[in-house]
Amino acid sequence: MPALRQALTVLNGKWKLPILMAIRAGSSRFGEIERSVPGISGKVLAKELKDLEDHRLLQRIVHAGPPVAVTYAVLPYAETLDPIIFMLRDWGSQHQRLLESTPSVNT
Amino acid sequence: MPALRQALTVLNGKWKLPILMAIRAGSSRFGEIERSVPGISGKVLAKELKDLEDHRLLQRIVHAGPPVAVTYAVLPYAETLDPIIFMLRDWGSQHQRLLESTPSVNT
DNA sequence: AAAAACACTTACCTAAAGGTAACTACTTTC
DNA sequence: GAAAGTAGTTACCTTTAGGTAAGTGTTTTT
Image 1 (cartoon, rainbow over the protein chains, first blue to last red):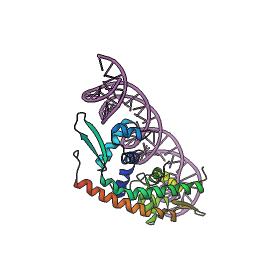
Image 2: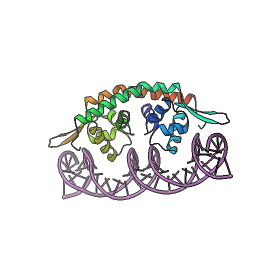
Image 3: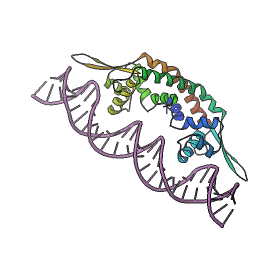
Image 4: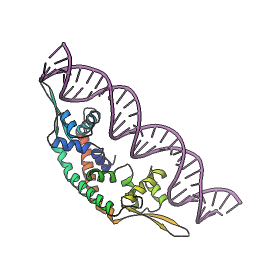
């Protein structure tokens, strides 16, 4: 896969970035993340957490009990995405203003 | 849609960036672009060209004939994506090296 | 006059992403 | 001992992305 597609694959999907943001904002337990990302289902959350772990953006930690507890933590490596995220957010909001100010013939 | 998702939507898909690159590299006619993006079909190319036009990244120009000719040109606005594209490419290739050097348990 | 090129469109199919709801196995609180 | 919580999994369905192949209408070359 070309490097550019690879990078887009990591960021893409409806939930990856919202999940990352939720964990950064303080959620760490599965149920806690589920509640703080409104609209996501358990199935999709489980799959996305696995993807994010595969990409070394977060770590799944099992704390020996009793009671055993599972937490998810964002790894420092995930911060290397920050400059890209900021640029994408800036460009995206600028782009939305452009589309609104010069609507296409079909809208 | 959040700004970040909006930006990702513009870039995403298997063919959008390869098409943009092909036109920048000198292809301008439909058939020419089709031949210079190996693997793409006419149907998908037509759809992607419309999307890119809707996002103001390129312009479809009909040259009055005879013979009439249709060309596609990348608009200057598309250059505002360049810094993002460079960062994504860099991060992506760095990420590929990381994944290779620390393979997961499932590979 | 026939054949090929040009820029698409249409119909049909497969695969991947995502959603819904029920279920599992364990633990903990009431 | 029943109910609720935790961290998922499973089966099933819909939507979106993308692929294949044939067709369309116009023009241009042979």
